[in-house]
Image (cartoon, rainbow, N blue to C red; front, side):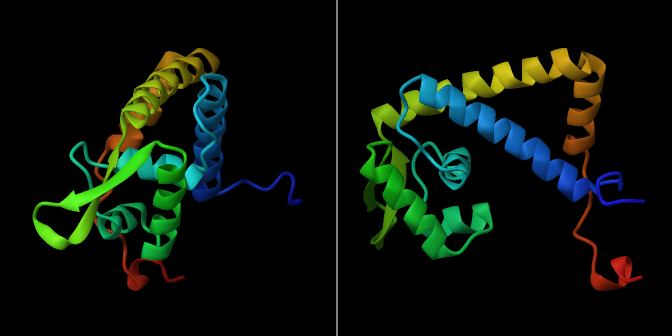
Length: 151
């Protein structure tokens, strides 16, 4: 089997699916006049609590280093989508939260993602899209240990 005809593994397919959604979302946001953001910044927005979240917690949720999360936050603060405010629970911490412009962008992104899901259902069929959602929402259990995946 050549590389071009080799069966792609699920992580590759999931990555391509994620990129499809990210690229569609970024294009929709650009068309709406939202400042340009990176896929990492989009992910940060998705894991941000309504009342604000610390950079350390954002990094944990995103599965990135604190430095990567800090850079993403800094970029979004710079374009006016996020702000840093004192954390009432800790004098040493700052909370990251959406600005009014960030709230509008978040709502616009939600609407764009819903349109992308509808478009996917049109392209692959509603039953296939529903089955995909069901498979991804099903509990997968804990991450397998090395004994489970060793060949």
